[in-house]
View 1 (cartoon, rainbow, N blue to C red):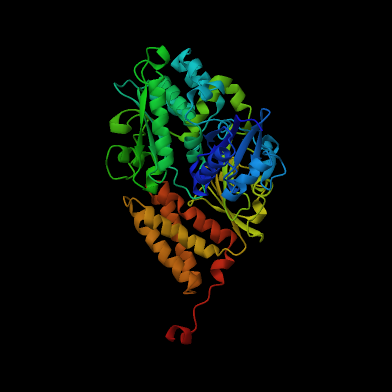
View 2 (cartoon, one colour; view 1 turned 90 degrees about the vertical axis):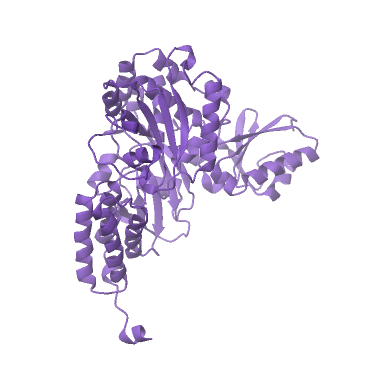
Length: 521
């Protein structure tokens, strides 16, 4: 075995949480015992979270995978010379079905390179988009983004090019680019994986956006629950600044753009863009009334572009490859690739990057391997805690913004949470209202009061109290919340409730009140 063996192990938060740091220590200890010199590169994750910690070994220029690793597996790795004889051997990484079935644009460097090595970033296509942007006019950059059909990946799906063009056309002494990394939806981790695995891609996208619209300052708003992502992004920004890629003279162009990281305070509603702006200004995170929209009056009253992590990270490749190449991937008006995240009762949970147009069934069955429990799947929630519940007989639904809207659902940030046939959908509906009670900013009455009354009423249904009348009351309340709430927090909370009532009504109607003797007892 070569004394200069090169190993790769994720430093991603998910991998670290299941022992990746311990594996790293064991590798160094075992190599020292044997008088071997290894190079261990800490990378991001490949997204196969059920296999973490996943160790990769470079053998003849090809990566071989071993996982999930435990400390006791390490000595045998050296005994077997990292061969397929090892119990954790998975074979060549690129031959794994999980990897072969994807179209990796955004995540192609995740797991492959050191996230903070700028030279490796450049060697793998980094800065190509920024170089082209600097050689182009602002109008041409915005036109390229517009032609690509890129839509906001945070959930709303608004065309990025239109937003950029609006801000670019406003004359102001200061403009901002804000990256919304407040990834609060249950079952989502795409932003975190990219921030920890390839932070330079996000930075490059923000610089391009700044140059395009005339902004000179950028802020990344990261949820407080992501300390590793915050640290990685901060260090990456320092590295870019030291390399002359940020500051008053970006890549020697004479043009200015600098950026920083801001930590959120744990509020789910700050994922809504105007509440995020309030938080960035040091205020309580509450939703602003619109108009004006942030592109006109955003941070500190200045024109502000707010895009999600994945939206901004898509921009460098769009500039490097061309808008038409990006638009050639996907389906309908949902173009490019999306990061789909499998969570919940799923055998193989993790992140898949695939073109829009893939079906729920392909993601859950082909990639996810079905339920972890082995029991029949009953429901899938897509789009976070405010997303609709989709029944098992609709798994052939295409992952596409318009297809989901037509089905009374939303694609959101691509999070997919799976439930087997033991789930109580009335309890899930109650949870949606409870979640809104906890996370509402309290500014508008339908959300603040409606969620409390909704949780109370569903609790009565689950106890069997006046079931028919209370179901009608919940449905009426949901209509009020949908039509009257100031933002999506209250406006979308009825979506999971109404979908549970529509597809799983038996879980509500079969509730029976306790017998009198049970109450007395």
